[in-house]
Amino acid sequence: MKALLLAAGRGERMRPLTDDRPKPLLTVGRESLIERHLRKLEEAGVRDVVVNLHYRGDLIQEALGDGQRYGLKITYSMEHDLLETGGGAKQALGYLGEAPFIVVSSDILVDFDYQRLLEVDAVNNHLVLVRNPEHHPQGDFRLTASGCVRLGNEATFAGIGVITPDLIRNCPKAAFPLRDVLFPAASEGRLTGEMHLGYWSDVGTPERLAAAQADYESGLCR
Figure 1 (cartoon, rainbow, N blue to C red):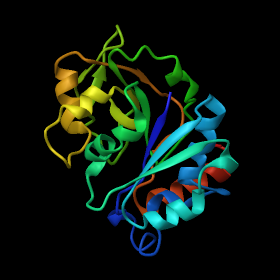
Figure 2 (figure 1 turned 120 degrees about the vertical axis):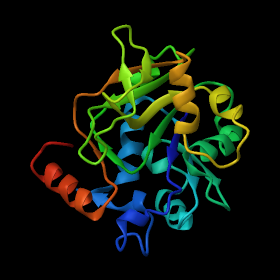
Figure 3 (figure 1 turned 45 degrees about the horizontal axis):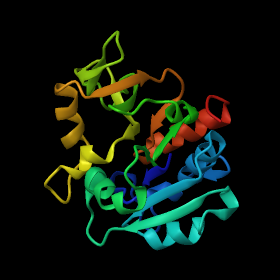
Figure 4 (figure 1 turned 30 degrees about the horizontal axis):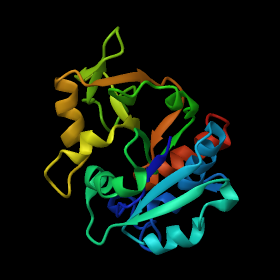
């Protein structure tokens, strides 16, 4: 199974730290956020990764290269205009092929085991959910006893999942967030999911980055 790392955003809320670099290259511990995901994907058995790029994509490409030193093959999908998460995934389909693929937001810090996703039966699209964080108390979804993801306010999309190409290919828009296709799919019963009860942080602001660094130093996340 291939993986798509979403790394094109401008990181406006992370300024001034992102004035001269893209958010995925910010570090927690000894690794950048995006390198941490690459390492964990390789450990899970993934070998082919696509990274979408826009803001300071040259720096990401320079930092990661062809992926050989991570045991991976990295392909880059450059966006001349920012296409958001869904549009970026749609543009990258030419590199991802026709099989379901793992999608990961590169600006999260998480101890999730990606190998779990390699075992998913992705006839339906599959999302990893977490408890609602303080900055998103309203949530996105709820998880039923049978493992179906429905719209609700009990859980938040973790930015990790398995996506089938048809889910995003059929969206008529060029630029759109993933929620534009995930919410209708949840309403129609076309999403499965699981709760991740371990460590997860949306490292979206300087304050959250500092908190994530403190969590790393205290051993809460490795």
